[in-house]
Structures are given as C-alpha cells and as structure tokens.
Length: 154
Image (cartoon, rainbow, N blue to C red; front, side, top):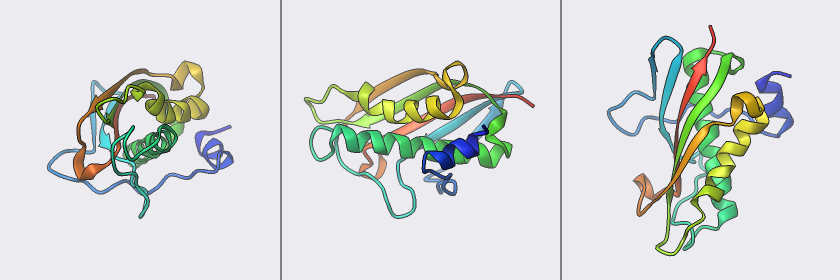
C-alpha cells in the first residue's frame, strides 16, 4: 500500500505546506539524495496548539501537535520531491517541546510524530534516530516544532 493510501486509511491527508516564518529554505537537498526539512509547527489551517506542556497543554494534546508537525514536515517534503513513496529512510527527527519547568515527558510528546512515521513507512524505513528537547518557548507560543532529515531514492 502506498503512503498516500495509508494516510487516508488513518484518516489524514497532507495539508498545504506551511508558510515560511522567516528567511530560510523549508527544504534543503544535499549529498544528492538527502533532504533536510526546516522546523515545522503544529498549525494546520486554523488549528494549532499553543502553550507549554505540563502547564496549559496535556501530553495527549502535545502528541497530536507533534503528529501535526510531522504532517507539515511531510507536506514540505512532498512539495519538494513530488512523491512520498520515494522515501528510502527517515534518518533523523528533532522535536522541540515547549515545556513547563517540571515537565519531563518530551519523548512521549515526540512519539506523536514518530508514531505517524512508523505507521506510514514501517519500522525499517520510518523509525528514525530522534531527539526530543524541552525548551522554554517556541515561536508564536506553539507547543511543539519538528525538523527532519530524509533519504530519498530517485
């Protein structure tokens, strides 16, 4: 089953790529087949997730936000390569979690994005190396931001 069919079966579709929030490239190709996706937040249409995990935002809400970040990451990659079925390897993701001082479940929050990749691509392709980092604030008071590195076959 292809990636787009899996997405649909899971009840998701790719949103339009998020608008740029500054002077950067949303997707940078290097070494021929590697694509680095700049950080994407959880906004899809009018829906977003703002606030700090452990203060205004629950782990479950954070996981949904992390999943939405990953949908935005995939949307940026799709717009660059044209077909997500070309993904050969999800190499690495980095998830930033805006956290209250006593919140220590950043890895659980990041599972929202990692879990989506695992379901879409399977363990051998979709389970990346990963970091989940707690930060005091993210742009626009978003709760989660994710960046990623993909290997693509041509």
